Image (cartoon, rainbow, N blue to C red; front, side, top):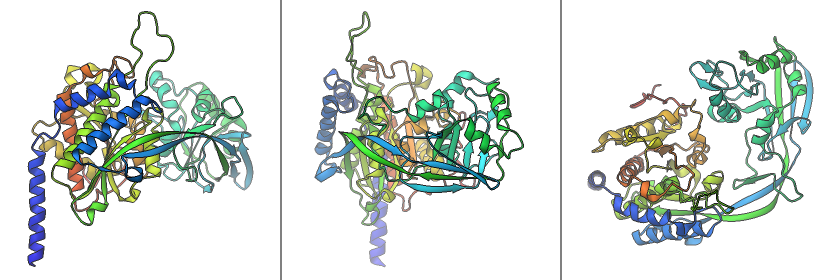
Length: 539
């Protein structure tokens, strides 16, 4: 009994110390300014992936981690995890067999259907539920082709090259290439099928000219199964809809006229995907993630982890001729994502030098985000700790400015993804914000599934979310200097950046001190524009 009392007293002391620590500013705006003035300087030449500048940035980050006593978390006792970036050629023999009321036809890739160059590992997938979802768009409350439909675990089919009339065509244009992702990633469909066309061909990637050019570039494992996603021509669709109450010719004509399209289940239809491809790596390049670990205090929970992340690469510099009158060729990336990079340095140092949490904390600077989340995708497939031991991931990218430079945004941050996998994680975030001396304005507009930017799928947090890990992405939004040479350190609001950093840091610490991992209920996006507050766990 006495040992239990001592243990309880020790835990209370730990939590009390952590609470007191949380009341103190742990991120210094002056230090953030000092670090960013180097990270976003011309000396680093825009921190492009594979560049000397990115290497200098990585070395600078490790110096700050060593100084604070953050443990190396990379390869061979270093802070670096090498990330092989593979150029791959594919020999694709994949096919899909369509059975309509006992009549069957098989369509091979390149003959009626086109599979992605990277179809993942070999698999056979049979789906007896096939749903036609009209244009396959979720634009807003006035046009949602998925309204009232449950397509989870089903094949999802759509048509139309332009979307329906009477809608914002600029918004539609931005959403058309996202229909496969919407069907499978957002709506949990088991396969997606759309029409062949210029937009879809670009999305799937045509083979470049040249005998030794790769079909695709990846850092992910090639042997893991992927959700089938294909485009198809008229012959395929005519057979697919051959037993439907409405003919394919009629549906196609309606789509060409941008007329309303129905949604319905294709009765008597079974699809069998036979995924079969061989891959040959034709070129390899290396970049590096930077990883530090602060070990937790609990003898059991220290083997579970909260991951904090940012990307430290940017887009480099213009190598060709500048336009008349221009003199600056270096894109310094102070906000994108120098702001996240240096804030993460401050968070790692604070974790190492302050009271320890029960769980361990991993701080990772991902490489290659600008080119396709290369570093985070590699880490998710080749983690330095068991992937099932990661209980949450918090990602920061562009947190140093006001959206569109509006003064009204001075206290605003945009969280994305908090509600999708773990309602509990969302509510922890709300509780932490409410407990801050100066709470931030949490705006969930970019979390809305109808937002055309689809931010949830466009930064490093999604590599973790795809593995089922609860995530939150934090940003202050875009501004006119995004991906321009004018994104410089003198335009950063360091006080705001420090406050957001402390907010994210405290969310992570709250999770790291829980006696359980945040519950994963996978209820999807529920918070959007105008939403606020906590979510009922029964919703």
